[in-house]
Image (tube, rainbow, N blue to C red; front, side, top):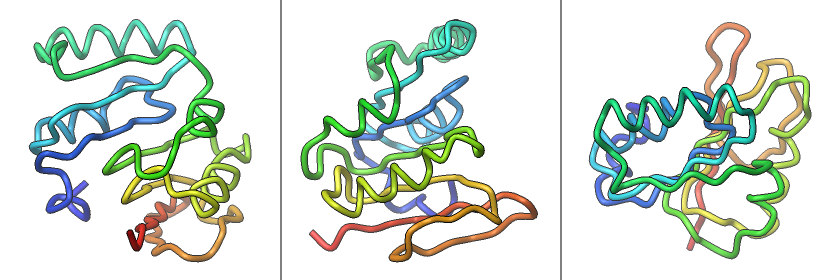
Length: 141
């Protein structure tokens, strides 16, 4: 999160594969103006809703109960400022999401977490932390 700290104030954030919402909620705590969360797992949705409520962030968030990849596929150009994505490593969604973003960037910044040994399209800056990697793609627009 500290890598994107300067990009978060007043940003419209999207947290794909949001799980508990940790990334989007952290972005709000660092000054983002709004956060959308995309999650389809019922157990994760309950945790997400509880976390949003505990932080009193209901007025700043929207929850989308659907597939993160299909949600991202329907986005236009630069719909968000910052997008966080932490898909299941074995799903191949990190690569598919990055390819979609490279075809038509739906945000100024895409941060996608993936297995360090996984295939991810070039064009981003990758940071590796043990078996995990995060690739940051930035739009030139």
